[in-house]
Image 1 (cartoon, rainbow, N blue to C red):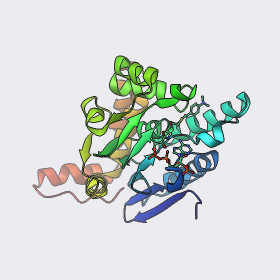
Image 2: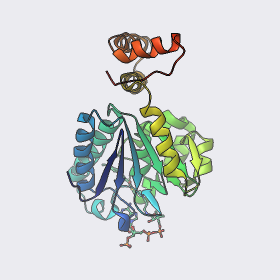
Image 3: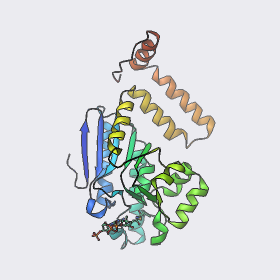
Image 4: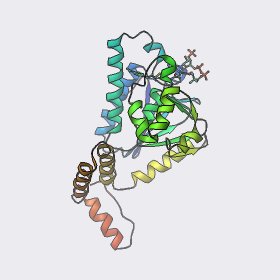
Length: 260
Ligand code: DAK
């Protein structure tokens, strides 16, 4: 399927989804969010895709936020609808069966930072910039930023970012744990692909169940989360890949996973 604001390229087990409104620094308008929701349904159904990489088109931005030119004239009901569309779509992304790597190649502001935080792993280029500048526009963060940022970096640092709207660079984002790694601009995508390939080479069910345990479990109390982890663990014993993985170890050979 063709999308107006997104590019989807599948190559073997890896899908690269590029936000493609470079003239507006890939800002998220409601059409882009709706397309994202549709493409996530498509990816979730596609068992050939094992890992998804998200990135932004152009040299400057991952995603520079929600589209301010669209938001400026919203009435409260339109604002609520837009916020709910963004929240529901980012939650769908977070719960996509396959792991998602954000390759953050420039500005990740407001909704763009929130988008990156809904991904499982964040890799940044050294020119990437992060922030939740909503308060400078008279807004609050509306796509989960007040919830995901404190969970990732702690309440104190998240409060500072959300109250000041200050922008931080990639090294600071790395220091506070907002991104896993920082690469030069020229190597970011190559490194994201390498990581995606490594993950795609593991037993798919085990990877997807690990993601589910992380995403669902971190929002539960510890006892419920551990109970969920046990069920997820038990489920791996229904897969041929579990038999292959453990047998290969005992036989001192490399496991060959078939995704069954
Ligand atoms: N929206 C729309 N257009 C944008 C944009 C954005 N977020 N960011 C950049 N652009 C556009 C610019 O208007 C410009 O368009 P033209 O003038 O060329 O037509 C083009 O992209 C290039 O931008 P600049 O010329 O400004 O480029 P610079 O390199 O000089 O500056 C910048 C780059 C990223 C520092 C600057 O563009 C900037 O400050 N952009 C805005 C960043 C921002 O504030 N982002 C957060 C947006 S607020 C909620 C739901 C959602 C939200 C909140 C609440 N509820 C329902 C409760 C979400 C809020 C946000 O994400």
